Length: 374
Image (cartoon, rainbow, N blue to C red; front, side, top):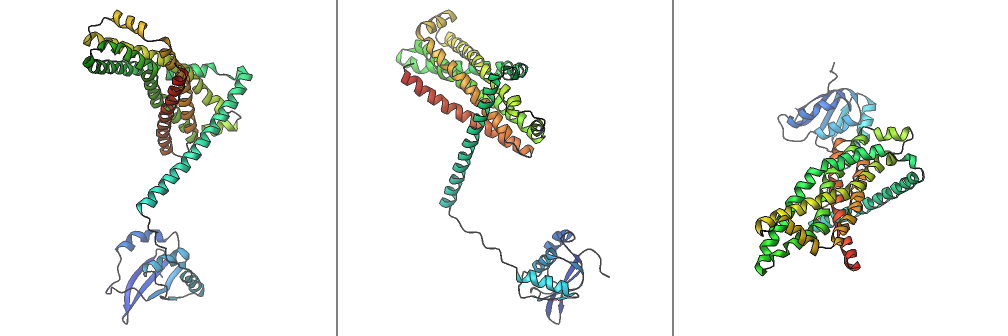
């Protein structure tokens, strides 16, 4: 009596190569054959079997038939011998309906590249539509919260402000201080060629106030707080905590998204102001070294030559950048599905999208301020 496990061997019968099979050939039992199949070869002959002997096979299904046909070289005209009519009928049906796998179409590099570009554009379109829908839903929930002020959660907003504002002060100060030093050093080196190195003060002030202070702070916040929002909400999504909130009647937009948006909108102007001061301090330190300025002279010249609107232009951008960063971070976090890998992927995407949107908005603001004469 043949055993339950499927076995096979290649033999020659009167010069005819034969594949002999025995045991149980079903979808569950043939798993153990994968490794042996790679090592098996027809014994004593290099020819493909012309006959499959199934007289010792106890059970057979379509998966077993396909496996046997593959062992025999996928020959459609191969003969078979069975001990039951049902096995013969099953074998004949599978053999009749076997279709060769069509070859993969050859695509040249240009067609492949255009296809990739097309898919990327379609994905970008769907991403923009989904993000706009999320903004709309957030605005609706925000309007409802304004109509019912008791729905605001100041404790959650303060907790998020501690994370995105207080804990970010050190890194923002250090990086903006160093940027101020770099601008002053480069300004002195270039302007000294024209005898205009004293204009380094204006270069530092205008560069920090109008562009670099707010832009650098926004990039730091996007990489630090925006990614944290995505990771936090994404982990909650994977653990089905957000589904549980919806089940008990809580709106995740109201409870999770709005506090983060409010916290970042409030914190960004404060961080930008802090970064501006650190950048000016860095520029002042560099000027005292390279220009023999005192701190009093540096800030006196800054007050006389740099208008207040240079400071206002950066502060005006800050809450808008904060809202964009928070909204994108929360949106990507809510898009997480199924696995920790998805959390990492969408966290990276949220940072890239946030920085891209911040730079685009900064360019738009620059054009608007230019047209307004500011």
